[in-house]
Image (spheres, helix red, strand yellow):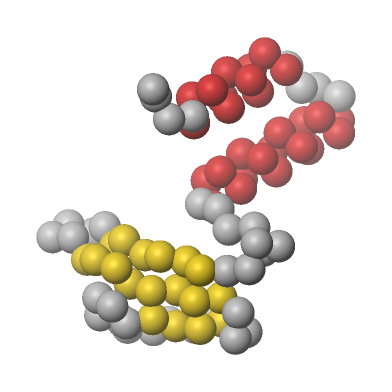
Length: 80
């Protein structure tokens, strides 16, 4: 793992195509970052990725409850 220190408005470039910029550092431990990447590269939070992988594995093993998956998906949608 490469560990870098960056200040707000500083950035890193990955493979010449992915641009990650530190937008803001809050007073706590939160860091707001921006990611610019080509549309064919999926960018998502790790917890969402892990949930998708778990759902895919459950579906492949035949032990999936579609009602539970739909309820989880609705929980992630923004409230109107």
